[in-house]
Length: 174
Image (cartoon, rainbow, N blue to C red; front, side, top):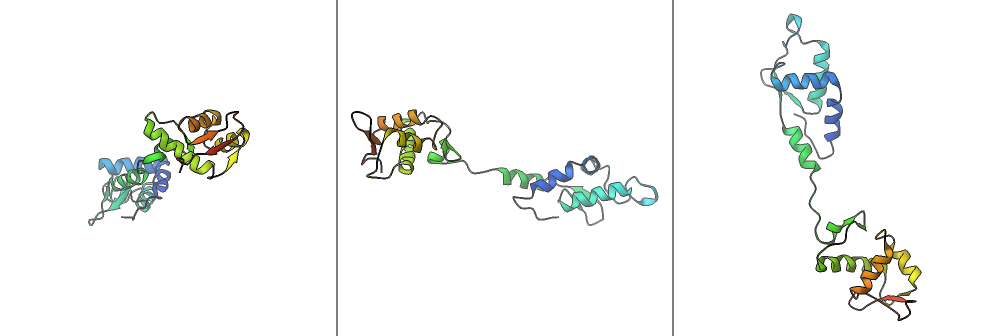
């Protein structure tokens, strides 16, 4: 049987996209085509069926048994499913999609962690920015940078001047 890796599920689907191959695969699974003698004349399978079987063998959907018969095994599907399973994100990553906040956490501790993650990437220590500059930097982390800026202030990770003209990281922000 062909050795399968995480990236080779596509050839399996490509083989099964063909009507003849899908029909022959179903016949092998059901035991209708179980040997080279099959249903053809003179002890031979039809050429179409033989071609389909070769394609199915190449991707590991069908194997030839010791007695020359054909058998379908579920290993290819198990490998494809296993390859498609990714580890569950942990920590802040649970709330991000492509490096942006996909949703704000309900838990205050998780929300603080997400905001801490943002402030560490958006503002350097000792940096003082005006409102427009802070908003522009936060835009890369969420579609609503004004709300994000407000959360950073509310959680004490960013401080703003009394008139709102200057923003900077607090010492508790990492």
